[in-house]
Length: 195
Image (cartoon, rainbow, N blue to C red; front, side):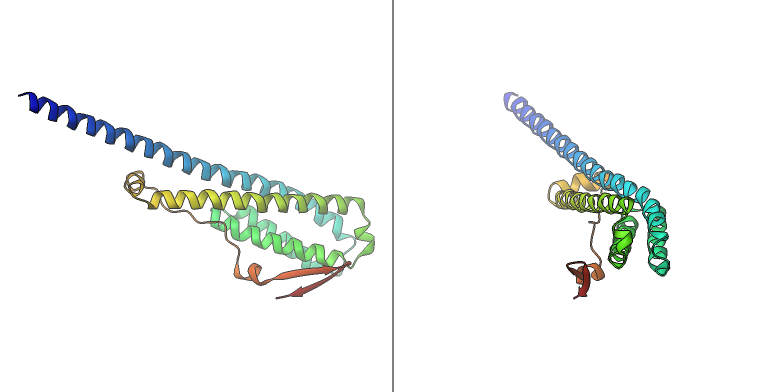
């Protein structure tokens, strides 16, 4: 009778230990998922700030760049695509379009000395450049969080808890092939493209 009690107590302690371990794993996976959501929300806030600056930039540039309507249309269309994007993947693609359109706009602006001397344009260009740098930093944090999350939900024993929680791998914020191949080099106010 004494050995049955000991075996029963050992089994009960084992079950309690496993239950505590599963609860710890569950809480860690919830934290990772929330960290990932927060990292994306930080990017989204910066994207919204950049979207808010685009109309001001376009209005400032319009008067100077009469012959560059295609560039302004590209920026406007990229902004619209970015504002209409719903998923993280769509927003990432729209963000890449917006970044490319802004690069094109700033490159064309180099041909307009009066525009480059405009105080509003310079302030907007500086603000958008700062936002671009912050977005790039946040993308790195987001990708780190996604990588950690994806690694954890794919490892044993977390994979079983993740399956129970219905957690799926998430996409990283990736650069398109076009962006990867494009290199812009500037020499004293002149822009040159190379691959």
